Amino acid sequence: MTLATAFTKMHGLGNDFAVIDLRGGSANGTASAGANGATPLTDISDTQARAIADRRTGVGCDQIILIEKPRQKLADVYMRIRNADGSEVEACGNGARCVAALVMAETGRRHVIIESVVGLLDAEAAPDGRISVDMGEAQLDWREIPLAKPLDTLHLGIELGPLSDPVGVNIGNPHAVFFVPDAGAIDVAALGPVLERHPLFPEKANIEVAQVLSPTRIRMRVWERGVGITRACGTGACATLVAAHRRKLTGRKATIQLDGGDLEIEWLADGHVRMTGPAETSFTGRLDASLLG
Ligand SMILES: N[C@H](CCC[C@H](N)C(=O)O)C(=O)O
Image 1 (tube, helix red, strand yellow):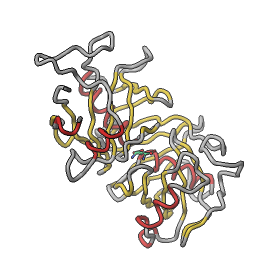
Image 2 (cartoon, rainbow, N blue to C red; image 1 turned 60 degrees about the vertical axis):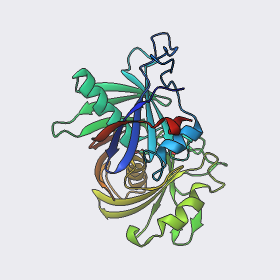
Image 3 (cartoon, rainbow, N blue to C red; image 1 turned 30 degrees about the vertical axis):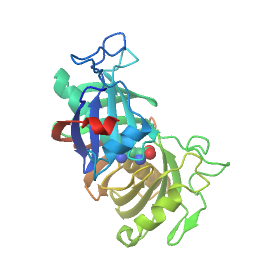
Image 4 (spheres, rainbow, N blue to C red; image 1 turned 135 degrees about the vertical axis):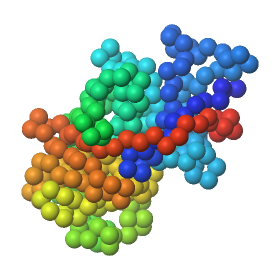
């Protein structure tokens, strides 16, 4: 039996998470038994992730974020991400800001380093209380998106209904950004799941619908791989800015206006993408044992 596991419910602009700190296990990585012989959680399965994410019978969240001890000395923590469908994925920008906020509160430091499968993410507390994360270098080659065949990632040449000719960008995870005259007019719920699974995307893709409002502001709506429509997507906002600049629609810095609020994104000269936005804690709780089977 597993000890009733604590979690922190957090969100970034309404993209919400159950954050589970797995660092409780003993130093050598083997979980020490609790008083009643139960053992602390050391990982979660696809099934457990789906049960936790379920908005009817579970905690209800877009992703589950796991915090583990770092593998690299430089890092403060190791972050893993599970989508609501149970899939483990490489990156989560809003989740990274939430993990950074937790580690900053724990350490009292305004600069923390989060390790993930795609590398080290530098996070800084901004003067206004928002959090700024270096999301790493945007990947633009067809192999890095990845795509099923060699293509110019600036024009992927697929279309569905009113959507066509997206830009492919990888921010640790795959994105396809479609530019449209009116993002509010697009049926994201109908088109998103089809495009997410398009044969061009061997690892599926997060789908962004972007309306350029000015050279420094873009409205973006998102269908997230393994989740569905979310109120915000940090990696999606990064992908959208990179795509817009590559298409000469904006400069290297813009505000991405999501259903849940604004993110500031900058594509730096070194190729890295910096994302700045809020990270909020909603409440803490304990996972019902039934969720962990
Ligand atoms: N909401 C997350 C993105 C999760 C991406 C996930 N849906 C995937 O499969 O890559 C963010 O703020 O970046």
